[in-house]
Amino acid sequence: MTRRYSALSLFKEGLAGQTGWKQAWRSPEPKPTYDAIVIGGGGHGLATAYYLAKNHNIARVAVLEKGWIGGGNTGRNTTVVRSNYYYPQSVELYGLAHRLYEGLSKDLNYNVMLSQRGMVNLCHSTGEMEIGARTVNAMQINGIDAELFSPEDVRRVAPIYNFSPDARFPVFGGIWQGRAGTARHDAVAWGYARAASRLGVDIIQNCEITDFIIEGGRCRGVQTTRGAIRADRTGMAVAGHSSVLGTKAGFRLPINSYALQACVTEPVKPILDTVVLSPGCGVYVSQSDKGEIVIGGGLDRIPSYAQRGNLPTLETVIAGLLEMFPIFGQLKLMRQWAGIVDVVPDSSPIIGESPLPNLFLNCGWGTGGFKAIPAGGTLLAHLLATGKHNDISRPFDLDRFASGRLIDEAAGSGIAH
Amino acid sequence: MQLFPCPFCGPRDETEFHYGGDAGNARPDGTQVPIDRWANYLYLRSNPKGTAREIWVHMTCGEFFVMDRDTVTHNVLSSATLGGEHVA
Image (cartoon, rainbow over all chains, first blue to last red; front, top):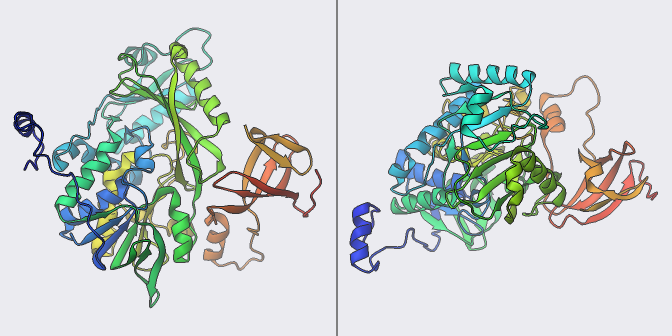
């Protein structure tokens, strides 16, 4: 039986006719009780379970997923990994995620195909360049790699951009983060699932939460479509559906759910080897390893739980794309889709205990949850194991809305939302 | 392109409209409002999956109105002025 993935095991299995590969993760029947329950089998939920077992030695953990793992926003995002945020609290958070991503393939023994190809946020005016310089300064002071790019630098990394004299959004420079890049989104979910399962975590798919078990004013588990499952502590990492579960648990959240769409073109030969974001065009673009041009833009402006995008936003995004890269006008769009994202007023996540004691939140990532998966998992695992915040998650508690200590990363979130 | 019914102008393109928030989220009265009550008003949202009662503004005519809508199917159930009249 081949359990560990390596060049050697690949070679051996090649000789043995590929018959010795084990299932990557188990699919056990749910047990009646666990030490901790994680609701949501996306990247954040699976990472939470993995770090509970790895960092805190708590392996009697169930991940409950109503569909299939990685089938929500983890499988629907544009795979960008970056940490070019402004405020120190955000830098701590996304910096942690970024560092963990850099070691993730080794840690999980699963290739998440992290490609640190760099990312440039373009500046289209002298005013934007001043803000860009301020952002670069803030990032450098906070210990994050950042560089202020001149138009020549931008031309060097993205020569196919529209540099013509009559361009609607001329390039004055940009904010460069060289360590940014992309990762294979499905591999992140599958890698965490496999690693967590091997540490004893039960991953239970097709298991929808119907209600919470509340005793003495505390959360003691969940009712599911596969029966009651009890645990002293429950965490939820369900992105755009956080309000739906919150309603079942008896509280409201500062969240509006919106559809965020993305699309890919047919695959072409390598032409763009970095991530380019234009705030003016409201679009960001990269090229996948398969050759597809991966295109993301702003939110659909209509509150929604429909996992599909509306046409007006797609038109805006494609118009912006063609302004940035007229050359892409020759390509055919192959797929277009949407995920439901949990948008919070200050564009920062909510991590901490919910108004229902013993139920913990990991939500509010809005349009940028994928890049934060390792940190979201680490921090929710810490909360579930200890019942307390650590220093990185403390500022992101739900209490910041009553205290007014918002962490307004509307600019850092990259695309307006 | 979806059409939304403005109670004043009739059916118009969705791009002419802007979402304004939960209907019925009234600003607390008085000067002695507890912090939690303020935070509820300012930040907490119903965000329902399914039928929602929402405030929208038709940016073309500038009028605010109430729309009942399904957030999963995007079907509009009804729209009315803030006073409850179904004009258009």
